[in-house]
Length: 105
Image (cartoon, rainbow, N blue to C red; front, side):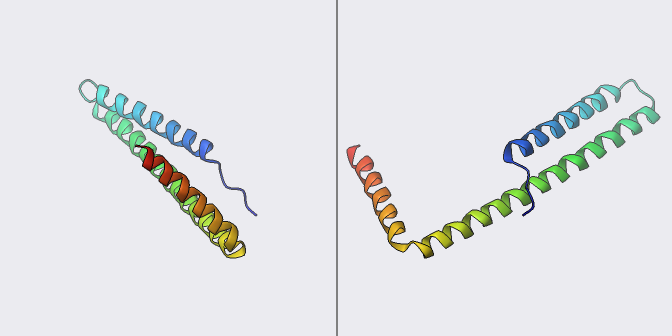
């Protein structure tokens, strides 16, 4: 089974990508008034590259999250089918607790 990145690692990747993107945009904004057009074009190119990297990171994290959700749903469905009475008891217990908590208000 291939190992997927953990959620914490993916969040760190996103934060890093956006810090880089924000730094590029800050450079671009500060350079627009006092730099030559060549330097401005170079900064725009770097900002565009970092934006592409950020989008790629978001897409990768999205795919990982969707696959994880599908895996959890499949495993939950399998558990309920393999252990129907346990699932009924758990559902009843949770429902009873929620009912008691709501009734206390």
